[in-house]
Image (cartoon, rainbow, N blue to C red; front, side, top):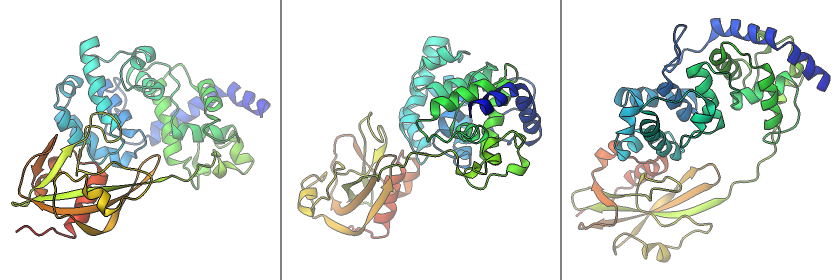
Amino acid sequence: MEDTADTLVQQAPALAAALLDWYDVNARALPWRVSGGPHPDPYQVWLSEVMLQQTTVQAVGPYFARFVARWPTVGALAAADDEAVMAAWAGLGYYARARNLLKCSRAVVERHDGVFPDTEDALRALPGIGAYTAAAVAAIAFGRRAVVVDGNVERVMARLFAVQDPLPGAKPALTVLADALTPAERCGDYAQAVMDLGATLCSPRNPACGLCPWMRGCQGRRQGIAAELPRKTPKGEKPVRYGVAFWTVRWDGAVLLRKRPPSGLLGGMIEVPSTPWRDSPWTLEEARKLGPFHLDWHAVGGVVRHTFTHFHLELSVLAGVARGGSVPAGRWVAPEAFGAEALPTVMRKVARHAAKNPTTVG
């Protein structure tokens, strides 16, 4: 393995040249990229990289377009209303990213007069920017030599060098190998080329080895194990948590919503009021005591299921009719206006579930 790795590293200039030639012809057309000419807008590169974390290009495209149209500069985003940004983000998941967008944009305005810094160290000093995002912005937006390693790059390196140690433990070694191949010129194009290679040809299943510019040097292909790499340490079963959501309808059909605390899971998002989420199911008697009002709550059949990164969630729904009134951080919203609210996907599921079993107002 070491001799093979050394040989490939010695071929790094030729490998980079072959990959860049492939990229010049096959680069994906993405809205945050520019072809030739000046470097892309650092704001758009940063915004796209944050959005793309644990999300697909297909899902991000419409969100990116809406964000750039509404907040075309980092200064505009920094001045945006928090709830408006959270509402625009709703459905994209991992909502801490949206909160970090606001924190970071405001830090760029306050510390750097609205201009993104152009080095990895300075970028990492901004809130919400980690090693990967700092490297990606430095390379793509500013042409800095930076080692950009996402899931696609890990897969390409594992196959090229036939690294059989499983992830996540193999990540440091894969980063070292990626560093050894990264050229000093066309750094942004190279970073995007490796990611494109992983996203298109060197895909998780059925890699198109015959079309790959690195086919001849790929040790995973030579050994017949490319499709098996990278290996991954088996994950344990996700636990299940349980909660009860209170679908509270006012006399005019409006539904009670409230804002979640600013930190923690789904922080700052809008929700249908619910019990805490715990490891054991709630009884009807337990849940009723925690409702936003003392009502004649009745159970809506079935459950709402949603999966987060670290656990599965099952929400039962209790429905009731209220004359009105308020709860802390709560407000009454007509269901047809839910589209403008920062409702995360799990709460939109609750709304759809309740709509199938309408609560009579009378």
